[in-house]
Amino acid sequence: MIVFIIPLLIFLIYALPTVIPIWRSYRYRKSLSVKIPGDEGLPLFGIIFKLGRTPESMPKRALELAKESADKGETILKMWIMHDSMFIPLNGEAVQSAIESNEEITKGSDYDILEPWLGTGLLISTGDKWRSRRKMLTPTFHFSMLDGYVETMNRHAKVLIDIMEGRVGKVVDLFPLLKLCTLDIICEATMGKELGAQLDSHQPYVSSIAKLMVLDTNRQLLPHLWNKMGRWMTGWQKEHDECVKIAHDFTEKVIHERIELLARGEVESNKRAFLDLLITQRDNESLSMTDIREEVDTFMFEGHDTTTSGLSWTIWCLACHPEIQERVYEEVKEIFGDDLTRDVTRDDLGKMNYLERCIKEALRLFPPVPFALRQLQNDLLIGDHLVPKDASLVIAPWMIHRNEKIYANPHNFDPDNFLPERVTTRHPYDYIPFSAGPRNCIGQRFAMFEEKIVIAWIVRNFRIQTSSAFHSNSAVVEIILKPKDGVKVTLRRR
Image (cartoon, rainbow, N blue to C red; front, top):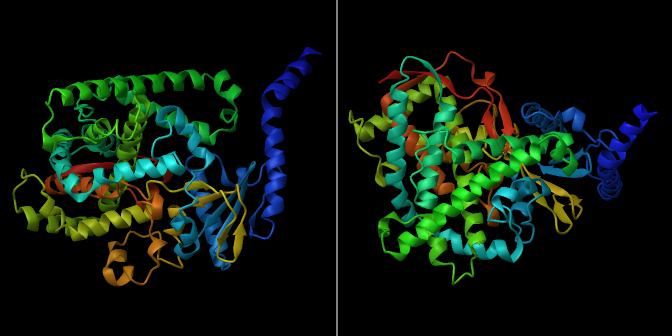
């Protein structure tokens, strides 16, 4: 008898509280969206089995479904995944009303997984809180402020070059090295703190950030972690809480140290960090210590993982296309000559036009944030279709950027896609790696500066080679879009 009682108890305690709201929500949303084309899949489960729930299968299958819909002439795709109805515009014109809306700025529930760490900072907040924070923080990334970060980017890029120098002639995975470099850069730019991650990758803070990314991805993809009890029973919650505490303790310690330095006048005016703005504005903006920590943690997260993705994919593209890599090298050589040690200046960045096209093309193929969810607060007209309130609208650069009705040979790496004459033939929102509209990425100029500087340093010093095929390295979604096999290349000195 006990053999039957235990599974029944597990179902009543664990599964039933999850299944009932899923079923109710499914029936309600289906009644509202019946006229919108798309694959409804199985009752209750939707297309979860068709998509797969691995970081690799999901983006691949999503692209296949998008192509099927686009081939039928449809501009929006509907998906059912458990209790959630998702509506995905497939081109820039279709996504325009969502992107430009000042009302539909509420992020989807998937972002809740980041809240224990990031709180309700700029990434997750909505409504008046988001508007006031956005207005306060925008000046931090003005061109005049970005000049102060160029020296920081150069200095940490040179540490990366020194590390790579020891790997010449060997197959090396650049992904973890780039990740530590971007972490060093954003930590100093955000907090004014020398983290030294490239020289000590096993620090508790560095390790906790890396672990949080894995844990949060698993929570998003694995059904047994969707329920609070499942997270506790598997030990996920305990491990997650420990990592969050380490991250918060580090940030709070740095905030207190920075407050003391500013009070003593020991921070040079040209060395101001993002944190300094928050500290100096805390009285005017009524910011608590928790508010400051939320924004610092948010920029630490957004400012290193997305940039790592952009850098990694660009370098992979260049390694797999040596003729394009040589054009980048020739452009950089025109600027620096044979000088391998001079810092990249702001003026130099403006001359790197071909490199910028390469970066943009890599961001087209591999947008760091492939999917961004909005929870609709009102019914929204997308083309001829009325998408119902409370549904999840997915802004999907991953799908729009690979729509063959927009880009010829959309899976090929072709920097000429960003020649001015080609750009003008497309809808402005056919290319949205940093999103667009009111909720566009506040740090996109910072990211472009950083990627140009780091890549310029690398190609000046090394030829990057690989014998692997371009498409052999699958894209996987782990919060951001990353290469499944890393960036395994052989380095040769120039």
